[in-house]
Length: 273
Image (cartoon, rainbow, N blue to C red):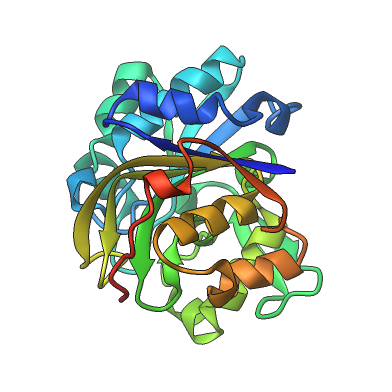
């Protein structure tokens, strides 16, 4: 039975800790000395906009991962229109990293590795940062709608593991299939979805912020996204990349045990893009 934590609470470290303590974080990251926190920096907007990962979520993750004895890095890659370094500062995560002495790595400038995608639907090979293959991975995602993929949660966040700045060509290949292919190569070992402030409507950048006071966490990335999608009023089967990742064996959304405060405590029908 896959466990997914759904926690309702004020924006605080304690709310994030409560979600993390309900899922087997240590077991999921066992064997990894270094862990990457993959944030969502698609824009230089701050966390209050609902577009970027809340620095408080990053801080809570750093503390919990260090308690497990892990070396921690925060990572992101440049996007088509966004410099990840500038977004790191604008989001407020830079202050957290500097205060806690956590390195930030823009993966576009890191050493690269090319990996074959077995049974790829859109890609035969992907180029990612070498350290992404050599580390545990946490998807510190957002609870947002998306104009192309309906939602952007933990699985979509891993699309940013691609190190090319100009990612539009991947959209032309079929972004849902690309998300599936990337997650077969570098799936997250832990997904934490920041819903303190989510986004509805014209996401992932220009939608309306929605105060949800919610954190959703799990070690099965498909199950976690499925629960988050349901919290937003979507069925996971209607989100193509969630369905494709399930079919590829990245995870599953059958036999999921929701722990914590439960879906009904946080469910809200988000306006679609």
